[in-house]
Structures are given as C-alpha cells and as structure tokens.
Length: 345
Ligand code: ADP
Image (tube, rainbow, N blue to C red; front, side, top):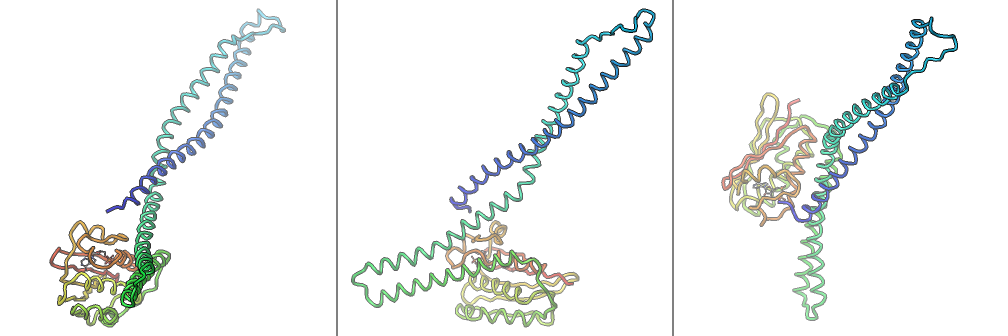
C-alpha cells in the first residue's frame, strides 16, 4: 500500500541509513584505534624496559661469574641482533593482537551501529511517509479548487448556476481541507502530550454526549445508535474519550448501510473496563485489521466513502495518552466491534 513517492524516499533512506551506519562504525573503530595505539605504546614501553632490565641483569651476572677474566674497564657487548629481534617480536605481537581486536570490534561496531540507528531509521521512515501522505492529501483538494475555478474563470459564457456550482464544489473541498488540518493538528498535539489527567466518569452520560455529536449524520442514514452502558464507570479523560467515541461512531455510521444499527456497550472486569462500539456494516478483512491504526491507512473496501485514514490513528493515540487501548474485531460483511479498554485505577 506504499505510494511511489514513499518508495523513492524509503530507498533514499535505506542508502542514508547504510552510510550513517558505516560512518558510525568508522568513528567507533577510529576511537578504538586511538585507544589501542595509546595502550600499545605503553605496553611497548614496559616490554622494552623489561628487556633492558634483563640485559642489565645479564651484564651484572656475567661480570660476577667471569670477574677473574675481566678488567674493570671491560665492556660487555650484548648482541644487538638479539635485541632487535626481541623488539621486532614485541612489535609484531602487538600489531597482530591489535589487528585482531580491531577486526572483531569493527564487526561488533557495525552491528551495534545498526542497532543504535535502527529505531531512528524507523522513526524517520514513518515521519517521511507521514509527510508524503499529508502533502498528497493536502494537495488534492487544493488542486481541485484551483482547477475548477480556473475553468470557470476562462468560460466566457459562465452563467450564475454554474458559478454557484463551482463555488459550492470549492467550499466542499475547502471544508475537507479544514477537517484534514484539524486531524493533523490533533495528531501533532496528541504526540507532544505526555500525561493526561484522568478521573472516574459515569459512562452513560459520556456516551450520550458523544452520540449527540453524530446524531445528525446517523439520522441522515436512518441509523439507530443505542446506548447500553447504564451504571458503569471508568477511569478516563472525558474530553479525549468523547473524541475517540465520535471517531468510532462516525466510522460505524459511514461504513454501515442505511437502516442498520449501532450499539455502544460497557463491561466491568477486575482490572479494566471495556467500552465497545458495534456496527452491522461492511466489516474489515483480517489483513486490513493489521494496518487500520496506521496513519492514512484506508481499506480498499472503504475507498468510495469520504475519509483520510487518520481517525483510528488519532483514536489510538488518544487512548494511549489515557493509559488505555483500542482494538478491533470484525468479519467482512457482518460488521465490526471496536473495543476501548480503560485500566481500573
Ligand atoms: P477513515 O474512516 O477516515 O478512512 P479511519 O482511520 O477512521 O479513517 O479508518 C481507517 C480505515 O478503517 C477506514 O478507511 C476503513 O477502511 C476502516 N474502518 C474503520 N472503521 C470501520 C468500521 N466501523 N467498519 C468498517 N471499516 C472500518
């Protein structure tokens, strides 16, 4: 379901992810090389001073053992080849050990750099996808407004009726834009919030308040919404929960046929309270259910109806802000049940 725009940017990001990973690996390895060189020099210094100490000992020993052969001014010459060989050996061993350490740590760094960058990479991808989708959705109504107005302006025989038609279409597109911008702002503000106050709320009134907000749309389609939530309370944020319920009820209306019914029910369990919105509408396939809560995702079956695919993503974020969850159960052709879970505190 990825757009070509997104595919291009995903590839671009894959390349920049790889190059960032390699760069990070090089940085890790360079730092380690500097540390290894520093310690190798210290080890080399110690090893060579050990060698010279041994040479000194040997000189003393020789002088003691062969004192009867030597004059006080006799100089004991040590084989410099052997000394050089010892030095070479120390250097060779240090180089071999360091190369091995560097090789192992370069591989380890590559792996660690991947693990460090992966969440950032995923976040960037999601952000990129979101921006691509949002710009596409914003551009579509704008293009429609511009095109219809340009055509109307160029028409020398434009009469009042067609002018009104063009204005009406433009207003429809403008209100679509307004809704989209409202949704985008809601998502952005929900993302920046950290903690939201919750309180114990009686569900029946809350559900009634939500139903009242969608009643006109329900009546237009002759859909009856029933509230079966008497005498149950939950710990939640009332404003956010009403937003979520309105999203679910609007969807239930949108994806149901005229004359069908929608039910809102509640159940209390030991540790949580469940609030469900059930419709008898078109239902959702198992495959679509996996992606429903992603931003801009719309199931193929619902493309003909109006929407941006942002409602459920917003609902999920608003639920998470209250420490709650949202889930779906559905069968294509039979209807869907969306469940809100609130923790009993
Ligand atoms: P929108 O409804 O604006 O497309 P949503 O994020 O609210 O966006 O929903 C995402 C998709 O989930 C919809 O496009 C639709 O395919 C599916 N969906 C949501 N609610 C229902 C429902 N009650 N019945 C059937 N499909 C639904």
